Image (cartoon, rainbow, N blue to C red; front, side):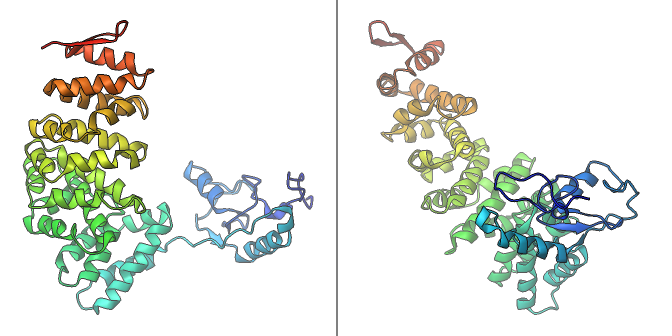
Length: 395
């Protein structure tokens, strides 16, 4: 077997036994299978996941699918990387090992036990959270157990032990909840009230995690009565909107905040509460800070709030609403264009001044003028003669 394969562009040859037999790339996490062959973990896991039950090199059946880390080979690869760093080779990091199911079961047992000291329970939750952050695979291992039921119980049964409750909450929002789990929260006014209080906690992380759970529960609850019950809780809109006002140096606050606000605004009966809490001003002030998907959700929320008179009035009173919507109407995505157009239609239908503002703003963006003209004309709000730059309103 040759000692090396073709040279790389770096001008250095990778030893043959450092390459994965499947990908032919330098192995970052070498593991050995039951046949004694070594592969890069990602490659062999992908091979097995596609239904293969044989060793790629020997073609012998894999008697089991246990992957044993080859620490000796990994250290040799790391030493080779360091020795060749002058050629631009970067040292591979020491991989974090996947979560062991037996260890996960033990940690969950500790976290849920009422007979263990709170500090030990807290330590178990922190270890689980660290594992969950490491990889999707670890989260899948943890999900295989009754993690949601355990964590929901810890969050809401240990409100007096704030550290324990907050750590469980941070771990819980890393997993999707079943409809029954969402209903178990939504149907308990005390649980929803607790989340609403946590939206005003001194820690931004606790506040954002609370908003994240609010969004998960509202989105996962099918019963309209329960969704309305959540959105009717005192100060829940104020808490979510306050999160959106956080500095953009904490981007997760914007992402989670707009998801929670949009989910709450899907409940028609309580949209006026969002308006009263200052949603209009905050959404317009923050609109430029959102990334694409979040900007779409923000525009969808604006469109929803513009469907009610108080929402139209609140957005109309902000000097930047109409110019900003006109400016971005074609800048983000087709879906965002639809939401921005819907909001503009509602605003222009409610006020002649908004119509004039829309046309005046559109004049400043010549490439958008025909689009906005078509939008408004087709909706029979205003008729625009662009050839003479004249605008007349009709009702």
